[in-house]
Image (cartoon, rainbow, N blue to C red; front, side, top):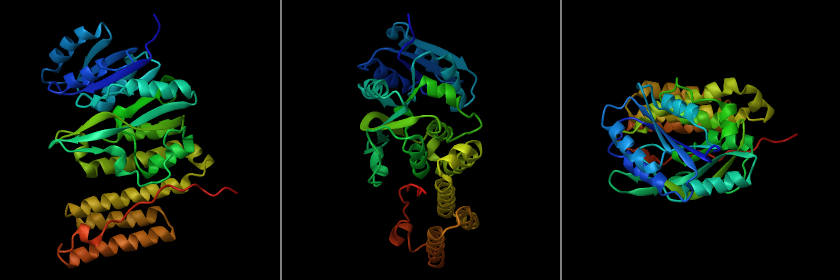
Length: 337
C-alpha cells in the first residue's frame, strides 16, 4: 500500500467544542485519498475523547498524537514529521473546509509540476455571524496573478506586499516541505508567514480565487493581538533577509524588502498610536523612514507624522477616519538592465 495523496495536519489545543466540525468537513471531501494526523498540543479539555471517538469513523486514516504544550509551530512540526502523504495540507481545529477543497488543490498540483505551493480564498466568519471574503481585503491590487503559476520572485514580491495566504487554504508538495524544513518554533506568532516566505524561495506558487474553507474569528484566537503579530511579522522579514540574502539579491528584490520593512514600522507605529503609546509610535515612524531612503518614503513619513501631530493637537477630535487612510501600493517589478 503506497503513501496517501494528502496528509491533513491538525494542531489542536483545547478545541474540543469545535474540532468535530473540522473533522466532519474532512470526511465530506470529494477526494478521500488522505491521512489525518491530529497533534494534541497539551490540551486540558476533553479533546482526546472527542478526537478518539471521531477516529472510529475514519477507517484507520486518523492518527492521534499527544504532546506537552509547545505551541502551534511545535505541533505542526510533530505532524509533518509523522506524515507520509505526497501533499501536505493544514486545517485548524476551529475552522472547516468546503467539500471540494482537496480536489481543487489536487487538480492544480497534479497539472503543474513546477508548482509546489497552492493556496485558495476563504471566508472569515465573525462571532456575530457576519461573513466576509478574505481576498476582498486586498484584491484592490488589480494585477494579482490569479489562476496561473507565480514565479518564486513574484511570489516573494507579493508576500512582502501583503500576506495573502490563509493556513487552512494551503497545500504544499512534499518535495518543497523537505527543502524548506520545519516551522520556526521561536516565533510565537507569524510562524506561518515565515514558512510561506521560505517556500517562495524554493517553489512556484498558485492562488485559487475560490472560497474553499471558512475561518472563524473569535476572541480566543492568537491573531487578535495585532500589534504583537505585526512585530513578529517584521522580525520574520528581517530574519528572512539575512537567511536568503543570496536569493533576494539575485532576483533584484532588495528594494521590495526595504519597502516591506519600512511599511511594517509604519503599521507598528499606527498600532502604538491608537493604543496611546505616542513616543513608541513616533519612534516607529522614524525607523520606517530610515528603513527605506527614498523620496516616496519621505513623503509617506511626512504624511503620517503630520496626520498624527494634527490628531494630537486636536486632542483626538479629528479621528483616523476623518483624516482618511494612508494606503499601500502594489509591488512593482525592478527595472532590468
